[in-house]
Length: 380
Ligand code: 13P
Ligand code: SF4
Image (tube, rainbow, N blue to C red; front, side, top):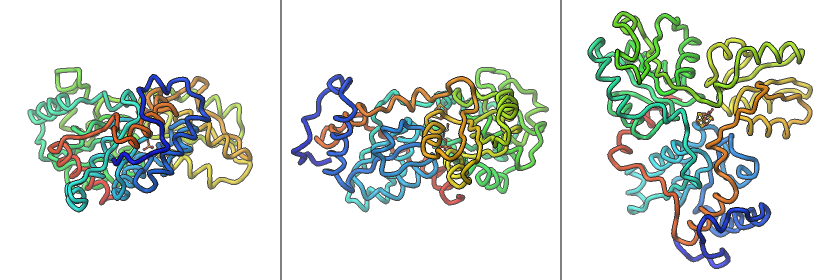
């Protein structure tokens, strides 16, 4: 990105930003936004802190943000206030070869303000483990009859695996449409890394539990399954989960129903099946937001998803009663790593022409990952 930014302080090391006053950081962030105009796009996931989300051009769930990255690739830089897999996805979609060619070879810089903002669920499936599982499955069933489906919360290498093997990516908002797409093509699905999204979605489509099995990547004996179990399975669920949504328990639903008459329980599909079964409504972060936004004054909610989104809903809808489903704090510590200091630091470096924390997926991985992502965008 060009360096002609005169009213922005010379980019300094991150330590110089730590401890700066929030009001000052906000002013400096807005100064960069004004200066760069449409050349810069800031994307913010719903789980981001209020102070950070206030500076985003687009706020959304994983699906909406990947669409924004694909559609706004006329910009020069995307700063992703979210986690690593989201920034990788933005890099892949904003830098599709035909778009880079149309820009005369120029790539869109994609920046993650703090490189430590990962996703513990995405880390539960490594490409080597998935390749091993695929080879092991092939000793029992024909892998030609399996469609690999990766939740977008996964490394680019897993998306590329899906691209290479006739598979597809899904998000929490289109998992059902994606599984329908997969079952039109093959008899079985290997779903990774979130067993809960896979199980909850397949169950609502009518797949019985005895036609699903769980693949434990740490168990060398067919992921902990018998040959018969695998042969009977239509959905093979990777043994991964979100540690934030794992904190919501079915007894929390019972307790809130006992204490809050008329409450509607609204949860994310990364919650366990036992929680989802007791809930009234289940859906992505945008779905959760929409339910509350469209509800009448006086509605009563208990919401099972990341704390920052629930707190924001509570603040923005004072005429409704909104409670956090769990009695304990369930917060995504990695999403929380993106703060005003990191945002300001990364923006000022970008404006000064010396970007930090660039996310760049290698061409070969991106080539196959985009195949799986484009299949998803075509389905939903
Ligand atoms: P959404 O796609 O519903 O925003 O979910 C992303 C996520 O990481 C939930 O934990
Ligand atoms: Fe990953 Fe869970 Fe955080 Fe979402 S909430 S980014 S799935 S760790």
